[in-house]
Amino acid sequence: QKDVNSSLNKSTLSNQINYNKNNTTTTTPNIIHLLTVNTNINKHIKLGLLNKAIDFLKNISSDDMAYFTDTIINLLEACAQSKSLTEGQKVHQYIIKTGMNKSNIKVNNLLIAMYSRCGDI
Image 1 (cartoon, rainbow, N blue to C red):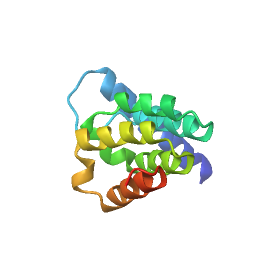
Image 2: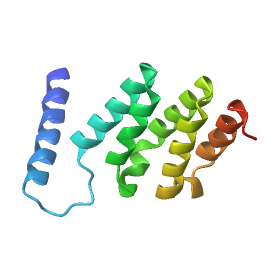
Image 3: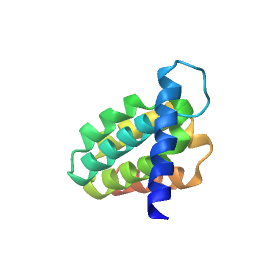
């Protein structure tokens, strides 16, 4: 069964790649792009390179933000833990730009916690 799941996942990814290469319009996000950006952000967070992690936010469209809620949460938590106000403010600006602050209570609570930990409340 593991081989079936593995080939199914490969097939799904392959179809997604071919679909996007044909320049057809789709509301389904490019899975490879989302995974790559998400992985890079989380890798840089773990390395303590918040500024570089935040730079990857530029690669996320506001339409795709729903797929990055956990990543934004990780960024806010890292900014709070390291008391990195400047980086936290960059993440906050991005959250406002994409409208995530209007619909996500957890993100809003983490923004308050981040500003509090950074001594800016």
